[in-house]
Length: 179
Length: 363
Image (cartoon, rainbow over all chains, first blue to last red; front, side, top):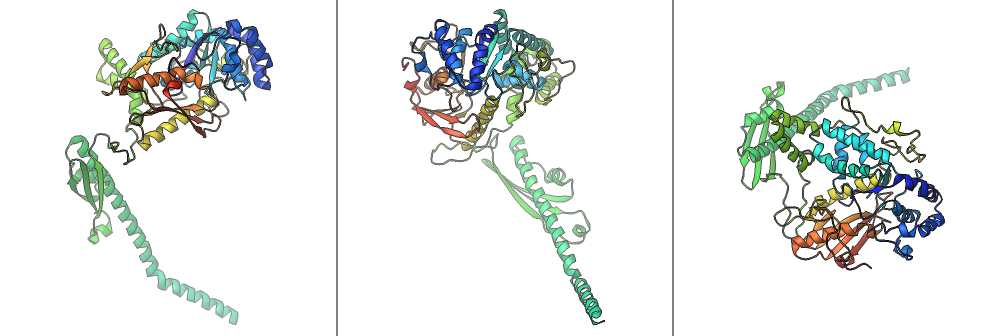
């Protein structure tokens, strides 16, 4: 099962205001100068996106593929902790299937929305990356709780997802979901 | 006048020839009808043989021939059944048509068919213990049941059953309720708390970020807000899993690494990459590689091209540790099978040693 659902509590509003435009513009143009500049300026807050270790000046050596997605992957760590994965792991497809069985609208709850231009969504892992605002986290939490009450037979399967949203909701933050 | 006579003559000959050939045409039509009926009877006999073999395997007694006759042709044929067996079930069914004018006028010969199957619960050929004999292995039977009757659902049924004293009817309704696919339909009274179209206009993220398909299938048919790369990743993994199961070359495909008793081995989700110890507060989980062959000591995982391998180090460490818990040693190699995330085409195989991932090696 190589598609492992990972989710991180994300300060979506800060991401949007500080990095959103930069990242979107770089995804459209393929020019990464400003992203690299952002990383240089904010290096004390950034982490290695793979293990969550603090970055040092040699950060660029870690990047295997020097494209906008990889730079964005590093820059985004200002707004979440890569070592604190609260995702659904291997269970995500089963949960998504259960939600889709209820309604095709619900399957999106455990992912979110991709970011960037439609032809080049931000996707450093090449298997999809998604974002949820703090408001969407609250709404999805309510959605799953309500669903669990109405359909007790699927409630245990939803617990892991409810727990994920609960953690983000308690922090008043959004979510970054990736694979 | 001569021309007219010739034409009439030609027509006359043609009519005469057709009239003379009529018995031949009728014979050909009757022959075709007869062959068709023979094929139908033959097929009924095959189905009867399958019916008898599966009946015997499940109930440990062959059905009577009349029951087979009723099952396959509604009693239109006289069925005779012979055969049996222990390790291999082998049944021969003869079907003789008995309805219709021809069948009642002429004594027709019976059509016989033979059906043979191993006498095992799932009818799949077990994987050979000898590596040079590569028998094809069946896909798991009743695959849909494994999804419907998954561990969580069964646990839930037992828990709810104990708590709320569910009747057998209620339990059945839970199972059939889960199994009956009603995709794309909202249940009565169900309202998405986050109605995607109401979240924002024109696919906005509510804050000016236009990057959504609103939870609906997009222009490429991707379901529930999935991007192409997620959809392709899911599809590729499923296709490869089916191929690998069918090849019979792997001990586990897209299923947890288990101990020798078949119990899934739980390993820490994240370890400290310097010490190898579980990170504080980390949860324990199953290790589920895309494929594993214990004897050859190989773990296979599919990843899209362009994905940094560092992203998957913790996951691969889980595979390695679970493998070692089972076999006592680490596998000989880890193969990363790359695929193109745009086209799903295979993109080459990278081979690694366990030391490339294990804690202590941070190069």
